[in-house]
Image (cartoon, rainbow, N blue to C red; front, side, top):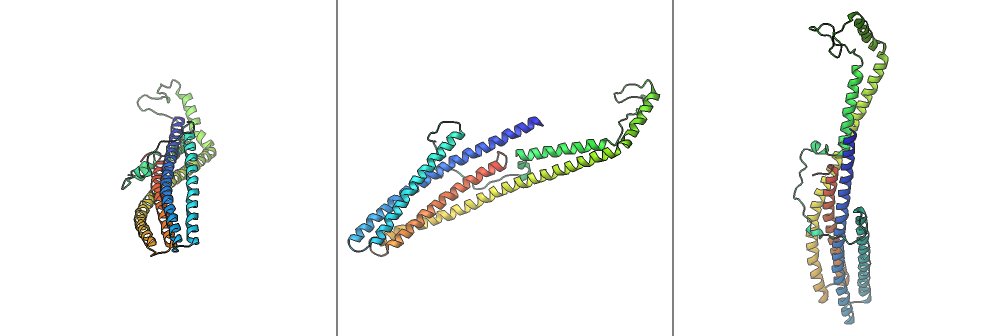
Length: 309
């Protein structure tokens, strides 16, 4: 039991470590993608500022529009610095987890992460038994069941009779003094009667502990099942949201393109172009987040199943 407990603890630590490293790695990939989007948006907004300044010179834009556009650019510049700071902190944290000096972590793009179209977890209860906490609860239930049987056996004397070898003891040896042995046997028969109160109390205690172990095992299965279901639901939700966000980004990119054309031909106001650009930035950021949510749900599912999918 001690050896199995040590193995379970080792598995739990390894599973948590793998999940933490994976989460940190993909957090870096997410931050990289956010940095790219911010940089691209920053260039577009700087171009918008230049366009508004040119329109202002010919009387087709006012100071309010130019100032608002400049303020948006400054906000993005500030966000870019914050992202760089988060990247550095995450790299330092991951380096510490890997027991290495702080350094730049080589990583792939978030867009290169592959996802399965469907996730099959097989037979839930069978897979849940891979979790260290479920195995521990199962072992405690088995031990409690054994203890109950031991307590119940205390009600019966330990006597062996053989019809072919005559009088024998529990070791199989022949009894040379049947009279003395019979006296001892009678004492053995009556001892459980004298200790009945103690035996009943021990049996009740063992039965109570067995029931507690059963409830603990049941609760561990329920908790494990909840974590698996939550991870699966999160994956399915993020998958659907990503598809919606992708269509939204495509639609807003077209809206920004057409709005910029209208602005150059005085067919729209600076407020409309700023609004569509802001909406596009938010949509692209949301799509990145849902992509990251899908990755996180798979990591959580890995952890919920005790280190295996």
